[in-house]
Image 1 (cartoon, rainbow, N blue to C red):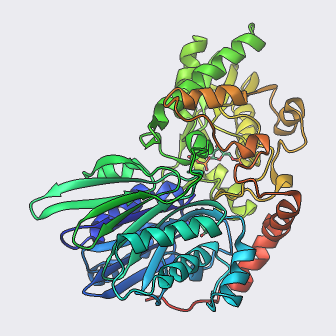
Image 2 (image 1 turned 135 degrees about the vertical axis):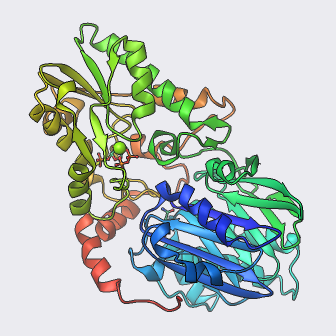
Length: 501
Ligand SMILES: O=P(O)(O)OC[C@H]1O[C@H](OP(=O)(O)OP(=O)(O)O)[C@H](O)[C@@H]1O
Ligand SMILES: NC(=O)CC[C@H](N)C(=O)O
Ligand SMILES: [Mg+2]
C-alpha cells in the first residue's frame, strides 16, 4: 500500500502534490517522489525518507508545471533503495512517468516478455517499473505521434490483459495528460475529484479521498475495478471501463488498518466500518465471555482507537487512553525489518500506570500481524501493574501472506500462522484473546455498501482473488522477501541509481 496522487491544474501543482503526499504519508514512509511537467519537460525529485525530508525549497522551486504525479512508498517488491523510489520514468513513447500502489503477481513472466519480446530494459527489481514498461509498450503499439483518449484506454486494456495482481496506478504522458487506472478486481483503492478555481476546473486522482478533502477537491467517485480516467493537459476528463471481467473484490485490510479513518473507499466510510468492527467484536466478547470482568478498555494507538471506543460503549465499560503515543514516530508495521519495528514500539508507546494498576484491562488492537506490538504492549501493561490483561483484535487472525501490496510475504513471520487462538494468547502473554470473526469483519465493511459482495480477505482465509497464486509462488516470495533475505538484499542494492536530482 503506497500512496499515489496525480493533478492536472491551472497553475503550478507542486505544492498541491506535496500537500497531498503529506496527507497520504500513512500509506508509505520509505520514500517519496514528485514529477511535474512544464512545456514538454519533466522535473523529478525522489528519494528515501518522509515527504518533509525529501523535498526542500530548492527542489520545490524546480518542480514547475501545471500537471504532475506523486508517490509515497512502502516497498513490497525489490528493495528499499532510493533507485526504486517512484515515480518511474521511461522515455519512449512520449516520456511516461508512473506511480503505482499494489503488487503484480506475474512479474517474472512480464519481465521476461518485456526483455525478450518488447525489447525493453528494466533497471530495478521493482514491479512498478515493469508495470510502467508494459503500459509504455502497449501505448507505443498505437504508433501515433499524438495519442488521444482512445489510445490511452487501449493501452490500459492491454495492461489488464497482461498484468495480474493488485494495481492502482497513475501515469503522466508528457505534454498530454494524466491517466489513472485500477486493476479488474479493484483490490487497491483510487478515487478522483475536482475543484473550481478562477482559471477553470482542476482535477485530482488519489489513493484516498482524504487527500481530496484536505486540498479542497470534491470527490467525484472511486474508479471502478478495471476502469481508467484520463485528464488531458487542458482539463478534459474522460473515463472508460477497460476490463471485460471487472468486478469488486477490494482489499478488506484497507478498512482494518491501511487507510485513514476519514477516507471514503468504494462508498464505505472507513471510520464507520471501524466503529462497526468494535460493535461486532463486543458482541462476540459478550457471547463468549459473559462474565468478562473487564474494568477498562484501552486502545493501542493509533489505528485501533475508533473500534475500541465503540467496543467499550457496547460492553458498557469505561474507555481510557492508557498509552501515550510519541507523535514523532511513524507507523511501526510499515517499517522495513523486524529490528526497526521492534525497537519503535517501545519508543512509540508509553503506559500511564494509573489506568492499569490493579485492574482487569482489555487491550484492543485493529490487528495482530507479526505480534511485534501486542507482545511488548502486554508486557508494559503488566509492568504498569495490571491484574489481568485481556486482548482483542478487531480483525480475524492473520494467517496467510499478502501478495497484493502489503508487505507480509512470509507466512512463518505471522504469529497466528499454524496456531490456534489459545496458542497465540500464550505466546503474546495475554490471559485471554479474542479475534473478530471473518464474517463479522466482512459485514462491518459491507454495511457501508451492500453492493460489494466480495472482498480480498486473503490474509485471513488464504483465498487469492486473482486466482493465479499457488504454493510455488508463495514459496518463492517467502524465500526472496523474508526478513533475513531482505536485510541482506537492501545492503547490496543500496548503490544502484540511474537518475535523480
Ligand atoms: O502485530 P504487528 O506485526 O505488530 O502488527 C500490527 C500492529 O501494527 C500496526 O500499528 P502501527 O504502529 O503500524 O500503526 P498505527 O499507529 O496506525 O496503529 C497495527 O495497528 C497494529 O498495532
Ligand atoms: N506498497 C505498494 O503499493 C508498493 C508498490 C510497489 N510494489 C513497490 O514495491 O514499490
Ligand atoms: Mg497499531
